[in-house]
Image (cartoon, rainbow, N blue to C red; front, side, top):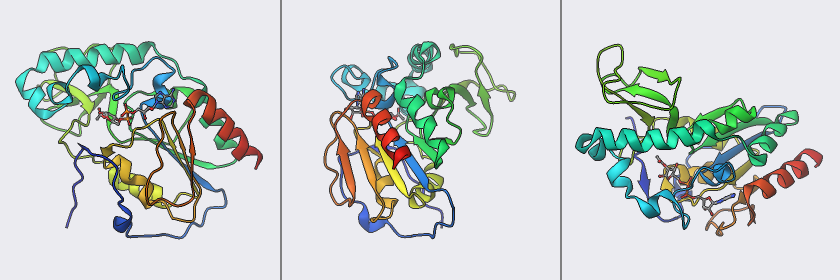
Length: 256
Ligand code: OAD
């Protein structure tokens, strides 16, 4: 039986009981798994969603980031993502993205990001799994396997895939399934160290990934508004901005 995980917003609850499997780690290098959210890119000038000036404080995601919005008004949805894509196009990685790259010196590093920007990759990180899609890519509306790298920030009505159908942003919208969550769960279950950076932890299934990390493994949560996640052991909460907290933690882990 295949299980589908759909994108939803919800407040934190304990998913511990769903942690169903544990696997043995046979790597020589320790595996460090990092879950990032909008906060890691905030200091690059990319707005978050739920802070005071966040996108979902001004706009309703139902109107811009859902299949219903796309059915109602394709131009509005394309314009919204064009605006955001242009900002990403012009943004640069910040000290948090850059510090994470240094972890490769000592660890087997895997980043799982909820972000649709490519700032981790542009900073030099190589293993980056995008849970919610990638804004610099467009996708066919008739064949989800047809995904195209964009060479500029604008996707227009009338831009079509090779089968002739309108292209849409390569983004997971609210109410859609999250195809990358199963590999992400497996990766989380293999973590020797788990880091969470800049996320409000209210969007599922991403927020449940921490539950798949073995209870005995150290976990860090860096976010100025981080809260104590209930039911999670060995969790250190660091209430700092990513640009400060991440380089400090990375130095500490490299020198440990
Ligand atoms: P949110 O906007 O919900 O949360 C952003 C988090 O970043 C908050 O907890 C802030 O405290 C924190 N933050 C702000 N500035 C920071 C900084 N300089 N350093 C570190 N943290 C900082 O964003 P996400 O949790 O990423 O999905 O949102 C999850 C998903 O909801 C997004 O991927 C997006 C959104 O709808 C889709 O669009 C599919």
